[in-house]
Every structure is written in structure tokens, then in C-alpha cells.
Length: 203
Image (cartoon, rainbow, N blue to C red; front, side):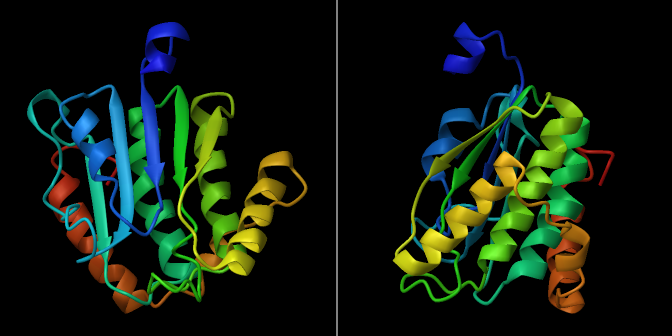
């Protein structure tokens, strides 16, 4: 809201890869078509929200994209979702700024989560987001550090994200996508596309 009211930003993309669904973020913007909220999260899990069919309300219908996941998703599956769902939707939305809810509790070995993303996987996720930002909004990306309970995994993962952001590393998402379980990824992509194609022609 600050960006919109004081910086002249009209359209904002919020990408949320934290383990938990951002129910507060969704509730704050679910009726607003100027904010695209995209969330991948472990489900069912606290706080219990974020089902596929939660797509926004009123004028904001279609501008909330939830991708709830069971346990075990790793680098290839996460990057695949960001490349094949977030990227086409975001390029159609054309954000003028991207905010990232950067939770590291999807890291492999996190004691609270059941996901398997490695530091390289996080590098791939931020690279996809940075590619979107370079195309749409001159590279405007702001990351906010959220959860993460395996300190070693979080340290290394944050380090790789920062390396991408300062240009010290350039990960190729396509290489990570090659490691995805195509059957598992395909089921998720089919479900999301089936729900959101009425709102986004790029899907």
C-alpha cells in the first residue's frame, strides 16, 4: 500500500514461497485487482487456508493464485510451478513492483516443514522472479525474510538468494526443472490451470 500511495506504483505482485499460507496477505488484498497474490504452501497445514479454489473476491477474483502442496516437493517441482504458473500469469499482469515473502521453512531438513528445496532451488526461485521483474518493472524486487527453522539450511539458502540478486550467480531455472517429477508436477499444473484459465489467457 505504501508503494501504491507514495511511490506511484499501481500494480504489485506478491510472491509467497513460505511453507505456511499467507492468510493475512490474502485477506488484505483478495478484493483488489491491482495486487496479484501468488502463494505456494504446504497443505493442509497451519493456518488451514489457501485451497486451489480460493481465487479472490469481487473485483479481485482471479488475482489470488493459490498452489497448495503436499509434502515432498523439491527444487524441480517448485521451480516448475514458478516457471509454468507464476511467470505466465505475472507477464500478463505486468507488475510494476514485486514483493517476495521469502520464507525458508520449505528448505530440506527444516524441522517444521516437509518440503525439500535446496539452496540451489531457492536460487532458481528468485531467478524466475528476477526474470519477471526485468521484463515488467526494471528489476524492482523487494524480499522480506520470513520463516526458517533449520539455521544452517536457512543461512546457505539466503546466501544463494542474495548472490542471485547482486549478480554473483545466475541460475538457469530450466536445469532445475529437468529434475522435477513430471507426474507430480503435471497434476498440480493441471489443477491450477483448470481453475485460473478463465482469468489468465497465458495459462
